[in-house]
Image (cartoon, rainbow, N blue to C red; front, side):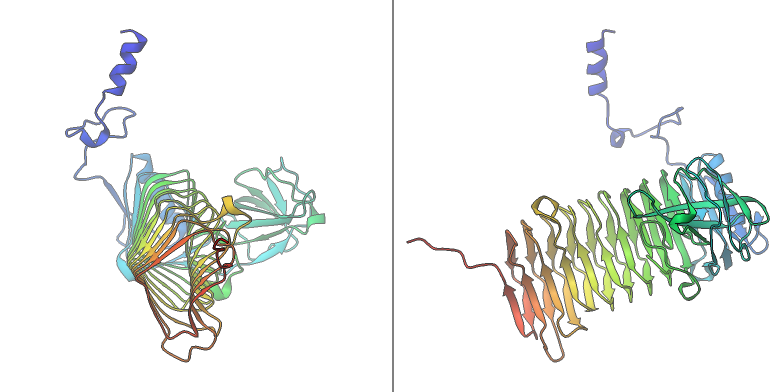
Length: 434
Protein backbone atom coordinates (compact mmCIF):
# COMPACT_ATOMS: atom_id res chain seq x y z
CA UNK A 1 0.00 0.00 0.00
CA UNK A 2 1.24 3.47 -0.84
CA UNK A 3 1.54 6.14 1.85
CA UNK A 4 -1.43 7.96 0.31
CA UNK A 5 -3.49 4.75 0.38
CA UNK A 6 -2.55 4.09 4.00
CA UNK A 7 -3.58 7.58 5.12
CA UNK A 8 -6.83 7.27 3.22
CA UNK A 9 -7.58 4.01 4.99
CA UNK A 10 -6.94 5.59 8.38
CA UNK A 11 -9.19 8.54 7.57
CA UNK A 12 -12.03 6.15 6.67
CA UNK A 13 -11.78 4.05 9.85
CA UNK A 14 -14.79 3.74 12.13
CA UNK A 15 -14.74 5.97 15.24
CA UNK A 16 -14.60 4.12 18.55
CA UNK A 17 -18.28 4.82 19.27
CA UNK A 18 -19.26 2.78 16.19
CA UNK A 19 -17.23 -0.31 17.00
CA UNK A 20 -20.05 -2.60 18.17
CA UNK A 21 -18.18 -5.85 18.87
CA UNK A 22 -14.66 -4.99 20.03
CA UNK A 23 -12.07 -7.56 21.03
CA UNK A 24 -9.31 -7.19 23.59
CA UNK A 25 -6.38 -6.32 21.37
CA UNK A 26 -2.93 -5.44 22.63
CA UNK A 27 -2.54 -1.69 23.09
CA UNK A 28 -6.11 -0.85 21.97
CA UNK A 29 -8.09 1.16 24.56
CA UNK A 30 -11.36 0.18 22.84
CA UNK A 31 -12.29 -3.19 24.32
CA UNK A 32 -15.37 -5.15 25.42
CA UNK A 33 -17.46 -3.98 28.35
CA UNK A 34 -16.50 -6.91 30.56
CA UNK A 35 -19.21 -8.13 32.93
CA UNK A 36 -16.69 -8.87 35.68
CA UNK A 37 -13.28 -7.51 36.59
CA UNK A 38 -11.00 -8.10 39.53
CA UNK A 39 -12.28 -6.92 42.92
CA UNK A 40 -10.09 -6.71 46.03
CA UNK A 41 -11.60 -5.91 49.42
CA UNK A 42 -9.90 -3.96 52.22
CA UNK A 43 -11.16 -3.70 55.77
CA UNK A 44 -10.63 -4.28 59.47
CA UNK A 45 -11.37 -7.99 59.13
CA UNK A 46 -12.69 -10.60 56.71
CA UNK A 47 -11.18 -8.80 53.74
CA UNK A 48 -8.71 -9.81 51.05
CA UNK A 49 -6.30 -7.30 52.60
CA UNK A 50 -6.83 -6.67 56.31
CA UNK A 51 -5.91 -3.20 57.57
CA UNK A 52 -7.21 0.27 58.30
CA UNK A 53 -4.37 2.46 57.00
CA UNK A 54 -3.32 3.91 53.67
CA UNK A 55 -0.83 1.05 53.34
CA UNK A 56 -3.59 -1.56 53.09
CA UNK A 57 -5.57 0.54 50.61
CA UNK A 58 -2.46 1.29 48.53
CA UNK A 59 -1.57 -2.39 48.36
CA UNK A 60 -5.01 -3.15 46.97
CA UNK A 61 -4.90 -0.27 44.45
CA UNK A 62 -1.50 -1.39 43.17
CA UNK A 63 -2.62 -5.01 42.95
CA UNK A 64 -5.73 -4.22 40.93
CA UNK A 65 -3.79 -1.87 38.63
CA UNK A 66 -1.18 -4.60 38.06
CA UNK A 67 -3.88 -6.87 36.69
CA UNK A 68 -5.32 -4.34 34.26
CA UNK A 69 -7.92 -2.59 36.39
CA UNK A 70 -10.95 -3.36 38.51
CA UNK A 71 -12.39 -2.41 41.88
CA UNK A 72 -10.93 -1.82 45.33
CA UNK A 73 -13.85 -2.12 47.74
CA UNK A 74 -13.39 -0.57 51.18
CA UNK A 75 -15.44 -2.26 53.87
CA UNK A 76 -16.97 -0.26 56.75
CA UNK A 77 -14.38 1.17 59.10
CA UNK A 78 -12.29 4.24 59.96
CA UNK A 79 -9.05 4.24 57.99
CA UNK A 80 -6.39 6.47 59.55
CA UNK A 81 -4.02 7.92 56.98
CA UNK A 82 -0.42 9.04 57.42
CA UNK A 83 0.06 9.41 53.68
CA UNK A 84 -2.06 9.82 50.57
CA UNK A 85 -3.57 6.90 48.75
CA UNK A 86 -2.09 7.22 45.24
CA UNK A 87 -4.70 6.19 42.70
CA UNK A 88 -3.87 4.34 39.50
CA UNK A 89 -5.43 4.19 36.06
CA UNK A 90 -8.51 2.05 35.48
CA UNK A 91 -9.08 1.46 39.20
CA UNK A 92 -12.43 2.07 40.88
CA UNK A 93 -12.20 2.91 44.58
CA UNK A 94 -15.58 2.20 46.19
CA UNK A 95 -16.56 2.50 49.82
CA UNK A 96 -19.52 1.11 51.70
CA UNK A 97 -21.32 4.42 52.17
CA UNK A 98 -21.03 6.70 55.23
CA UNK A 99 -19.55 3.85 57.30
CA UNK A 100 -16.33 4.00 55.23
CA UNK A 101 -14.30 6.95 56.54
CA UNK A 102 -10.76 7.91 55.51
CA UNK A 103 -9.42 10.14 58.27
CA UNK A 104 -6.28 12.26 58.15
CA UNK A 105 -4.03 11.93 61.16
CA UNK A 106 -2.91 15.20 62.86
CA UNK A 107 -0.02 16.98 61.19
CA UNK A 108 3.36 17.72 62.73
CA UNK A 109 5.98 20.08 61.34
CA UNK A 110 9.68 20.79 61.78
CA UNK A 111 12.41 23.02 60.41
CA UNK A 112 15.13 21.68 58.15
CA UNK A 113 18.55 22.20 59.71
CA UNK A 114 20.86 21.28 56.82
CA UNK A 115 20.97 22.52 53.24
CA UNK A 116 19.57 20.14 50.64
CA UNK A 117 20.43 20.91 47.03
CA UNK A 118 18.25 20.28 44.00
CA UNK A 119 20.01 16.98 43.28
CA UNK A 120 19.61 15.66 46.84
CA UNK A 121 17.13 13.04 47.97
CA UNK A 122 17.25 13.59 51.72
CA UNK A 123 16.38 16.15 54.39
CA UNK A 124 17.48 16.72 57.98
CA UNK A 125 14.91 17.83 60.56
CA UNK A 126 15.51 19.88 63.66
CA UNK A 127 13.02 17.75 65.58
CA UNK A 128 11.88 14.43 64.13
CA UNK A 129 9.34 13.62 66.82
CA UNK A 130 6.06 12.62 65.20
CA UNK A 131 7.63 11.75 61.83
CA UNK A 132 7.74 8.13 60.65
CA UNK A 133 9.05 6.25 57.66
CA UNK A 134 6.16 6.04 55.21
CA UNK A 135 4.72 9.45 56.07
CA UNK A 136 3.61 11.82 53.37
CA UNK A 137 5.21 15.24 53.80
CA UNK A 138 4.90 18.70 52.31
CA UNK A 139 8.20 20.57 51.97
CA UNK A 140 8.17 24.36 51.73
CA UNK A 141 10.95 26.90 51.30
CA UNK A 142 11.48 30.48 50.16
CA UNK A 143 13.18 30.43 46.77
CA UNK A 144 16.56 32.21 47.00
CA UNK A 145 16.29 33.60 43.46
CA UNK A 146 12.79 35.08 43.13
CA UNK A 147 11.59 35.09 46.75
CA UNK A 148 8.49 33.03 46.05
CA UNK A 149 7.45 29.86 47.82
CA UNK A 150 8.49 26.42 46.56
CA UNK A 151 6.20 23.55 47.60
CA UNK A 152 6.91 19.85 47.08
CA UNK A 153 5.15 16.67 48.20
CA UNK A 154 7.24 13.62 49.01
CA UNK A 155 7.23 10.41 51.08
CA UNK A 156 9.75 9.53 53.80
CA UNK A 157 11.20 6.13 52.86
CA UNK A 158 14.21 5.65 55.18
CA UNK A 159 15.79 7.31 58.19
CA UNK A 160 18.81 7.55 60.42
CA UNK A 161 17.98 9.70 63.43
CA UNK A 162 16.81 13.06 62.12
CA UNK A 163 17.89 12.37 58.53
CA UNK A 164 15.25 11.05 56.14
CA UNK A 165 15.51 9.73 52.61
CA UNK A 166 12.76 10.83 50.18
CA UNK A 167 11.02 8.71 47.59
CA UNK A 168 12.09 11.13 44.84
CA UNK A 169 14.84 13.74 44.43
CA UNK A 170 14.07 17.32 45.38
CA UNK A 171 14.92 18.98 42.06
CA UNK A 172 14.70 22.27 43.99
CA UNK A 173 17.09 23.93 46.43
CA UNK A 174 16.01 23.67 50.06
CA UNK A 175 18.54 25.89 51.78
CA UNK A 176 18.43 26.87 55.43
CA UNK A 177 18.55 30.54 54.40
CA UNK A 178 15.03 30.12 52.95
CA UNK A 179 13.53 28.82 56.23
CA UNK A 180 12.60 25.38 54.88
CA UNK A 181 10.02 23.25 56.70
CA UNK A 182 8.54 19.79 56.47
CA UNK A 183 5.00 18.95 57.61
CA UNK A 184 2.96 15.76 57.41
CA UNK A 185 0.46 17.25 54.97
CA UNK A 186 -0.97 15.47 51.92
CA UNK A 187 -4.21 14.86 50.03
CA UNK A 188 -6.18 11.90 51.30
CA UNK A 189 -6.63 10.64 47.74
CA UNK A 190 -4.12 11.72 45.09
CA UNK A 191 -3.80 11.05 41.38
CA UNK A 192 -1.27 12.25 38.81
CA UNK A 193 -1.24 11.34 35.11
CA UNK A 194 -3.96 8.72 35.46
CA UNK A 195 -7.04 7.92 33.37
CA UNK A 196 -10.29 6.03 33.79
CA UNK A 197 -10.67 6.29 37.58
CA UNK A 198 -13.85 6.23 39.68
CA UNK A 199 -14.09 7.27 43.35
CA UNK A 200 -17.44 6.66 45.00
CA UNK A 201 -19.51 6.02 48.08
CA UNK A 202 -17.12 6.97 50.89
CA UNK A 203 -16.29 9.76 53.35
CA UNK A 204 -13.03 11.73 53.48
CA UNK A 205 -12.30 13.68 56.68
CA UNK A 206 -9.39 16.13 56.62
CA UNK A 207 -9.33 16.64 60.42
CA UNK A 208 -9.06 20.39 59.86
CA UNK A 209 -8.73 21.33 63.54
CA UNK A 210 -5.52 19.30 63.89
CA UNK A 211 -3.78 20.02 60.59
CA UNK A 212 -1.90 22.93 59.06
CA UNK A 213 -3.18 24.52 55.87
CA UNK A 214 -2.30 23.08 52.48
CA UNK A 215 -3.91 24.99 49.62
CA UNK A 216 -5.83 23.50 46.73
CA UNK A 217 -2.95 23.78 44.27
CA UNK A 218 -1.30 20.97 46.21
CA UNK A 219 -3.87 19.22 48.36
CA UNK A 220 -7.44 18.55 49.41
CA UNK A 221 -9.51 15.60 50.44
CA UNK A 222 -9.07 14.66 46.76
CA UNK A 223 -6.31 16.18 44.62
CA UNK A 224 -5.82 15.32 40.95
CA UNK A 225 -3.16 16.60 38.53
CA UNK A 226 -2.99 15.98 34.76
CA UNK A 227 -5.71 13.32 34.67
CA UNK A 228 -8.48 12.33 32.27
CA UNK A 229 -11.88 10.65 32.53
CA UNK A 230 -12.37 10.78 36.28
CA UNK A 231 -15.72 10.16 38.00
CA UNK A 232 -16.33 11.17 41.62
CA UNK A 233 -19.75 10.15 42.92
CA UNK A 234 -21.49 10.04 46.30
CA UNK A 235 -18.37 11.18 48.14
CA UNK A 236 -18.47 13.21 51.35
CA UNK A 237 -15.42 15.47 51.61
CA UNK A 238 -15.28 17.39 54.88
CA UNK A 239 -13.07 19.40 57.24
CA UNK A 240 -9.91 19.79 55.15
CA UNK A 241 -7.62 22.71 56.01
CA UNK A 242 -7.56 23.68 52.35
CA UNK A 243 -9.89 22.49 49.55
CA UNK A 244 -12.43 19.72 49.45
CA UNK A 245 -11.95 18.38 45.91
CA UNK A 246 -9.39 19.93 43.54
CA UNK A 247 -8.48 18.90 40.01
CA UNK A 248 -5.75 20.66 38.01
CA UNK A 249 -5.30 20.31 34.22
CA UNK A 250 -7.79 17.44 34.27
CA UNK A 251 -10.26 16.78 31.47
CA UNK A 252 -13.69 15.15 31.41
CA UNK A 253 -14.05 15.08 35.18
CA UNK A 254 -17.53 14.30 36.52
CA UNK A 255 -18.41 15.19 40.12
CA UNK A 256 -21.94 14.08 41.01
CA UNK A 257 -24.03 13.73 44.17
CA UNK A 258 -21.16 14.68 46.47
CA UNK A 259 -21.20 16.73 49.69
CA UNK A 260 -18.17 18.99 50.16
CA UNK A 261 -18.40 21.03 53.35
CA UNK A 262 -16.66 22.92 56.13
CA UNK A 263 -13.31 23.37 54.41
CA UNK A 264 -10.92 26.26 55.06
CA UNK A 265 -10.88 27.16 51.35
CA UNK A 266 -12.80 25.82 48.33
CA UNK A 267 -15.56 23.24 48.15
CA UNK A 268 -14.87 22.26 44.51
CA UNK A 269 -11.87 23.57 42.58
CA UNK A 270 -11.86 22.81 38.84
CA UNK A 271 -8.30 23.96 38.34
CA UNK A 272 -6.05 25.40 35.68
CA UNK A 273 -6.73 24.31 32.12
CA UNK A 274 -9.42 21.75 32.99
CA UNK A 275 -11.77 21.07 30.08
CA UNK A 276 -15.38 19.82 30.07
CA UNK A 277 -15.94 19.34 33.79
CA UNK A 278 -19.46 18.25 34.77
CA UNK A 279 -20.49 19.28 38.29
CA UNK A 280 -23.99 18.05 39.09
CA UNK A 281 -26.30 17.58 42.11
CA UNK A 282 -23.65 18.31 44.72
CA UNK A 283 -23.96 20.15 48.04
CA UNK A 284 -21.20 22.69 48.71
CA UNK A 285 -21.68 24.13 52.17
CA UNK A 286 -19.86 26.35 54.68
CA UNK A 287 -16.60 26.69 52.80
CA UNK A 288 -14.72 29.92 52.14
CA UNK A 289 -15.91 29.61 48.52
CA UNK A 290 -18.24 26.98 47.15
CA UNK A 291 -17.28 26.46 43.48
CA UNK A 292 -14.10 28.11 42.17
CA UNK A 293 -13.26 28.06 38.46
CA UNK A 294 -9.50 28.58 38.35
CA UNK A 295 -7.44 29.49 35.24
CA UNK A 296 -8.51 28.50 31.73
CA UNK A 297 -11.38 26.26 32.84
CA UNK A 298 -13.54 25.87 29.73
CA UNK A 299 -16.69 24.19 28.42
CA UNK A 300 -17.81 23.07 31.86
CA UNK A 301 -21.33 22.63 33.25
CA UNK A 302 -22.39 23.19 36.87
CA UNK A 303 -26.04 22.33 37.38
CA UNK A 304 -28.56 21.33 40.04
CA UNK A 305 -26.12 21.95 42.89
CA UNK A 306 -26.95 23.40 46.31
CA UNK A 307 -24.24 25.95 47.17
CA UNK A 308 -25.02 27.27 50.63
CA UNK A 309 -23.48 29.24 53.47
CA UNK A 310 -20.11 29.87 51.83
CA UNK A 311 -18.30 32.66 53.61
CA UNK A 312 -17.15 34.73 50.61
CA UNK A 313 -18.47 33.51 47.26
CA UNK A 314 -20.88 30.84 46.13
CA UNK A 315 -19.43 30.61 42.60
CA UNK A 316 -16.27 32.39 41.37
CA UNK A 317 -15.24 32.55 37.70
CA UNK A 318 -12.09 34.26 36.47
CA UNK A 319 -8.84 34.03 34.48
CA UNK A 320 -9.67 32.79 30.95
CA UNK A 321 -12.57 30.67 32.25
CA UNK A 322 -14.69 30.76 29.12
CA UNK A 323 -17.74 29.03 27.64
CA UNK A 324 -19.02 27.54 30.89
CA UNK A 325 -22.65 27.11 31.94
CA UNK A 326 -23.90 27.62 35.51
CA UNK A 327 -27.58 26.67 35.55
CA UNK A 328 -30.42 25.57 37.79
CA UNK A 329 -28.43 25.77 41.02
CA UNK A 330 -29.55 27.00 44.43
CA UNK A 331 -27.00 29.51 45.71
CA UNK A 332 -27.96 30.43 49.25
CA UNK A 333 -26.61 32.66 52.02
CA UNK A 334 -23.36 33.67 50.32
CA UNK A 335 -21.12 36.33 51.88
CA UNK A 336 -19.66 38.87 49.43
CA UNK A 337 -21.36 37.57 46.26
CA UNK A 338 -23.36 34.57 45.12
CA UNK A 339 -21.71 34.61 41.66
CA UNK A 340 -18.51 36.56 41.00
CA UNK A 341 -16.88 37.23 37.64
CA UNK A 342 -13.40 38.22 38.77
CA UNK A 343 -11.49 41.17 37.38
CA UNK A 344 -8.33 39.85 35.75
CA UNK A 345 -5.24 41.62 34.40
CA UNK A 346 -6.70 42.64 31.03
CA UNK A 347 -9.22 41.91 28.31
CA UNK A 348 -7.62 38.71 27.04
CA UNK A 349 -7.57 37.22 30.53
CA UNK A 350 -11.27 37.78 31.31
CA UNK A 351 -13.96 35.10 31.73
CA UNK A 352 -15.79 35.62 28.41
CA UNK A 353 -18.88 33.87 27.02
CA UNK A 354 -20.16 32.24 30.18
CA UNK A 355 -23.86 31.63 30.81
CA UNK A 356 -25.67 31.91 34.18
CA UNK A 357 -29.18 30.58 33.75
CA UNK A 358 -32.16 29.53 35.86
CA UNK A 359 -30.43 29.75 39.25
CA UNK A 360 -32.11 30.61 42.55
CA UNK A 361 -29.88 33.10 44.36
CA UNK A 362 -31.36 33.69 47.79
CA UNK A 363 -29.97 35.91 50.58
CA UNK A 364 -26.55 37.43 51.16
CA UNK A 365 -25.06 37.47 54.63
CA UNK A 366 -23.00 40.66 54.27
CA UNK A 367 -24.64 44.05 54.29
CA UNK A 368 -22.79 44.94 51.07
CA UNK A 369 -23.38 41.58 49.39
CA UNK A 370 -24.08 41.25 45.65
CA UNK A 371 -26.14 38.61 43.88
CA UNK A 372 -24.13 38.56 40.63
CA UNK A 373 -21.01 40.74 40.49
CA UNK A 374 -19.43 41.25 37.04
CA UNK A 375 -16.01 42.89 37.06
CA UNK A 376 -13.35 43.75 34.48
CA UNK A 377 -13.59 44.07 30.66
CA UNK A 378 -15.64 40.91 30.23
CA UNK A 379 -17.88 40.29 27.24
CA UNK A 380 -20.38 37.82 25.91
CA UNK A 381 -21.96 36.92 29.25
CA UNK A 382 -25.58 35.81 29.34
CA UNK A 383 -27.47 36.17 32.63
CA UNK A 384 -30.98 34.87 32.11
CA UNK A 385 -33.95 33.43 33.94
CA UNK A 386 -32.45 33.71 37.44
CA UNK A 387 -34.35 34.43 40.64
CA UNK A 388 -32.28 36.79 42.79
CA UNK A 389 -33.89 37.60 46.12
CA UNK A 390 -32.99 38.89 49.56
CA UNK A 391 -35.61 38.25 52.23
CA UNK A 392 -34.34 40.41 55.13
CA UNK A 393 -33.47 44.11 55.36
CA UNK A 394 -31.84 45.19 52.08
CA UNK A 395 -28.96 47.12 53.63
CA UNK A 396 -26.56 48.10 50.83
CA UNK A 397 -27.03 44.90 48.88
CA UNK A 398 -27.24 44.84 45.07
CA UNK A 399 -28.96 42.26 42.88
CA UNK A 400 -26.68 42.50 39.83
CA UNK A 401 -23.67 44.81 39.56
CA UNK A 402 -22.11 45.50 36.16
CA UNK A 403 -18.63 46.99 36.57
CA UNK A 404 -17.43 50.07 34.74
CA UNK A 405 -15.17 48.10 32.37
CA UNK A 406 -17.63 45.38 31.33
CA UNK A 407 -17.80 45.12 27.53
CA UNK A 408 -21.08 43.30 26.97
CA UNK A 409 -23.59 41.32 28.97
CA UNK A 410 -27.10 40.14 28.17
CA UNK A 411 -29.66 40.32 30.98
CA UNK A 412 -33.01 38.66 30.30
CA UNK A 413 -35.98 37.51 32.37
CA UNK A 414 -34.28 37.76 35.75
CA UNK A 415 -36.53 38.26 38.78
CA UNK A 416 -34.83 40.50 41.35
CA UNK A 417 -36.36 41.54 44.68
CA UNK A 418 -35.44 42.74 48.16
CA UNK A 419 -32.27 44.71 47.34
CA UNK A 420 -31.34 48.33 47.89
CA UNK A 421 -30.60 48.38 44.16
CA UNK A 422 -31.80 45.71 41.73
CA UNK A 423 -29.25 46.44 38.96
CA UNK A 424 -26.24 48.73 39.32
CA UNK A 425 -24.73 49.41 35.91
CA UNK A 426 -21.52 51.36 36.51
CA UNK A 427 -20.60 51.76 32.85
CA UNK A 428 -20.57 55.31 31.45
CA UNK A 429 -23.72 56.14 29.47
CA UNK A 430 -23.27 55.60 25.74
CA UNK A 431 -22.83 58.79 23.78
CA UNK A 432 -25.63 59.47 21.34
CA UNK A 433 -24.62 61.65 18.39
CA UNK A 434 -24.79 65.36 17.70
